[in-house]
Image (tube, rainbow over all chains, first blue to last red; front, side, top):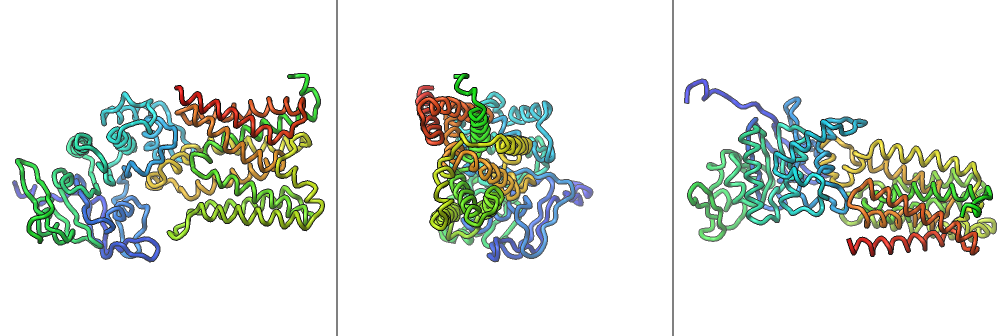
Length: 259
Length: 266
């Protein structure tokens, strides 16, 4: 590695500076300092109810900080992939119609989706491998297909950052693997910065390059191989955790030596 | 059938019913999808209470009804952040209070008591052409506004969190939808009565949603079902001297039954 490369710094897309986040008067996270850089694949993990989704909402601008600041790089476009269980499936919408919603942010208040928008959506559906499902009702799809639709919807907004909340929740291991490989491809080939919250440590451990441990505040952030240790995880989950390696894969197990 | 509708008052009644049926059926699809069917009932009740209040105090029923309905809209459209209660419970409170007030107003005025059945079940045969023109104009504006901003309405209802993250002000769009609904209910009640307006908001919409997996087609089927029920029942009510409002509700229910059977076998 030469000197120039060593000095190279990645562009900062977003920075939390001493931010307190919460709802109403209830503070969920205090004094949060976290930087998101261009090209990150950041996994946010922590016990239930410790503020992981709250961070995502603040990143998206849905939640304003109670104290401190959340700075965004001007012009950086964020797209969100929510938990698919939160979609109201009573709506009779096709995959195409759901994915088109991602374009709305580019259309303005009065704009109608054009042929170009539809072509762009079809391209995104193709990119995630479900172009043939464009005219199928969204509600009849499998969990994996729904997740791909929501990822395609996010991609149609041509984002620089993709923010995902529990993208592989309630999926079988085949679908889980396929979705995570898709995210890896989007990160590696399309240079999309990815932030994902997941309670599935084995998933995050093997895909995220950077990890943030959350427990009422930011306990630790850094490269996955530095942060993902038995001690760190045992501390925040208050249960014995082991981190093993199997080939090039990391496996997180509970039980064994506490702490 | 055409001979039955030769009389001008019947033509006016037919036009009024078709307009009320079509606009309520169209908005009803979104009412059902948004899971706020009870809002329709509550707003209809608030609007009726407004009519009765206006009669008691000698004011313009349309204006008082509209004002009270808009108050209901403001109250019902707010999503409660209080975890101890639900939005649904607030709507229930509104419905109960509006119903109680209506009974109190009726008890206080003989004039109101005499017109109670008309307001409840409607008397579409006594509608004036001026009322029809007002309803037609308001319906056209309501549907045009809703269609113009359908992407915001649908996104806000289907996935409010992502819509908000995309810069769509879901709270405002929610309020806007309730406003459109409130104005239409308030005007429609004066023509068709509480029962028929509420039925038009729910029954044809469910028929449309049972028969189609596509939002636009579901709206079209809902409007078609409301129109078929209206035309056939007005014809029958003239021939058989039936109260038109309840008869339209019954006919809509029959169409819903047919739609349910068809949807089972598809």
